[in-house]
Amino acid sequence: MGTQRLDFAEFYREAKNECLLTVLVSVGDRDTAQDLVDEAFARAWASWRTLSRHPAPSAWVVRTALNTSISRWRRRCREVQVPDLALVADRPAAGGAADSSVDPRIMAALLRLPARQRQVVALRLFLDLDTAGTAQVLGIAPGTVQAHLGRAMAALRDDLIPTLQEENQS
Image (cartoon, rainbow, N blue to C red; front, side):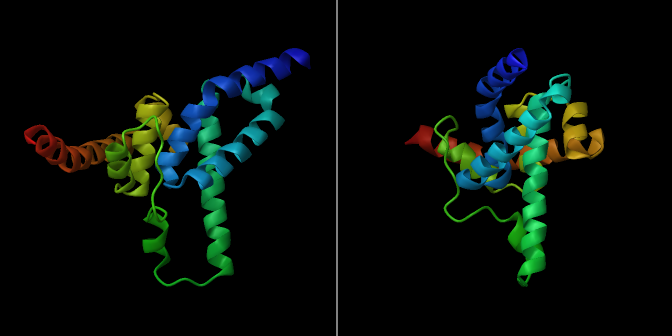
């Protein structure tokens, strides 16, 4: 049991920041992301004997956090009737969220992407998952991952390049 505890502690230390950043980009609110990641790590600890053999335990934590987010959202939808729920679900939280490890302009541009595109970008860039791994975590086809990534990168280029060019001209 002692070795298992140390292995999990090491995994937690190494993975917590990248998992938090990935979920933060996906949900757009730091407090919510922290709650989701904390819950996912608690579940990881409870399943560590099996999870420690998983090929990408960080991806498992992120997927668990995102699934928890979806479950919470669905539960709130059943409890409270809100008009145009589809519009509310994809909108980042008020005020956005900043993280010192990501340039605020990039974070703002990421938060303007649709939710699925944010998730794909976060998993590919922050967790360094390949297309197949990203597809598995999100439960979508690899071609869909590539399509979302292509659209997201084009949108980010369109959003960020003019801003950066204006700054360089100043």
